[in-house]
Image 1 (tube, rainbow, N blue to C red):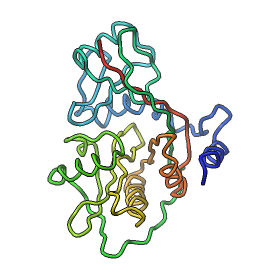
Image 2: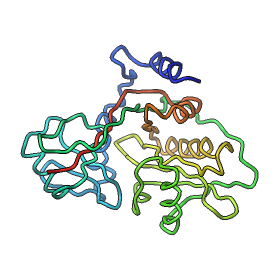
Image 3: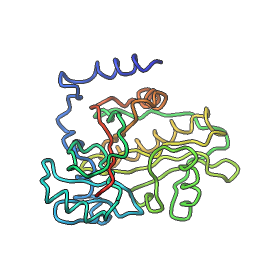
Image 4: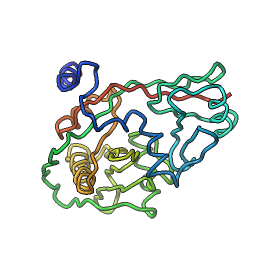
Length: 253
């Protein structure tokens, strides 16, 4: 399936403004800020109206919808001189002197209201297990090898993380990250090179969708535009594009 077909198919389900018509998605416009003000408040650090996650949990930072110079100064002080400001999908532009580090185009995808996750065939001998603090070294090793996105020593505290082991070794994982009201983000979906093509990613995402919807929330996720294979997987599972996003990172002055 080509990127053109993927994007066209996704856009066919989107509204005339390029976003999916769903009145229950307002919290997804600022998923980092909404998470830090709510479910993840205990994992936040703040200064004025600027906020971010504790350093070993996540690198994401947030400011208000229309930040002024004082707010940017607060964020710079919060992160420290030369600190990494991972602004995620925040569209606000920092003042002059903030060094741009990266820009990455992508999509925000959501699980349709009322949709059922379905079932996936289990790989023989492979069982989904819940991961915890004792699994962190292997989780860090797997994400370092597969690069599904930022993962730190305390990232697992954001929510439930599931994995698949083969002969005792962790070969695939996925988990919960941002938690704006009514939603849970699925993230860190990855499989070791030697374990790909066995359906582990599909099974893990389905298992998380089942857990999230069972508690009355809806799953969502983010995917880089260039990651055509991942987007194809998420569309096959039932996710639809809500909007385009641009991820950006800066270094504070």
